[in-house]
Amino acid sequence: MTPPVASQPVALVTGASRGIGRAVAEALAGAGYAVYGCARGQPQAGPFAAFHRCDVADPVAVKAMFAALARDAGRLDVLVNNAGIAGANQLDADADDGLWHAIVGTNLTGTYLCSKAALPMLPDRVGRIVNIASVLGLRGAADQTAYCAAKHGVIGFTRALALAVAPRGIAVNAVCPGWVDTDMAAGRFAELGMTAADAARQTPLGRIASGADVAGLVLFLAGPAAGHITGQALSVDGGAGA
Image (tube, rainbow, N blue to C red; front, top):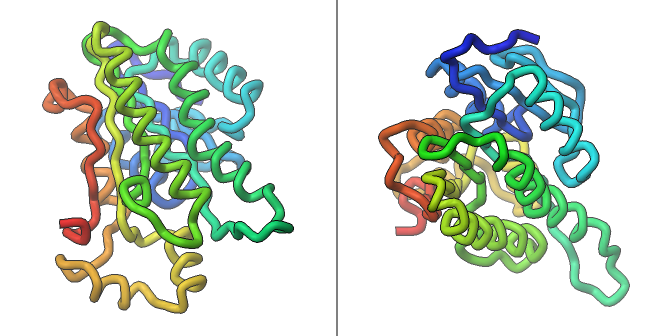
């Protein structure tokens, strides 16, 4: 564990072990933040001041993680709620409801729990919360009812929370990626019988996003230049939603 220096801003990125979360952590660290990460798996090496093993859907685990963050870092300037899972859930009468609860628990309840825990630590006027939603928080997909419900919920939560904390000057925004070059996307391609090249051909800019494309927007929203942007859901989709 490497504690931040007195003037160093502190960021916490959930789901930071791979994919978008890892790219966001690297971007924030490169911009001078002391980055604390968490995921359900084993602690990771990399750009982290410390890495916590935490299931963000578990209130007890979230409380313990934020207590450790308060003890070790003493502050928090930016929370990035990135932890998420996906899956095609069926609506047959005898379908198992476990996947629904897991997806909503991690994507939506986890965002709520971490935001709630972060608010007492975030400084007025400069504190930031960035929630990673999805383009499926803006539209539907027939076999993704749980994921769409959760990500629509993240956007609604973002807008309501932005208004709730506006008197403190804390900005809260959502980032809505389309196809991104991640393991999660690869799994979805397999479900749909398509490839990354197919997705690129369907994207007006001719390629799917990299983790760095998403991280760049998160970094902007975390910084002072975005101080008057709040309650927004901003897409990173290569023009697919235009």
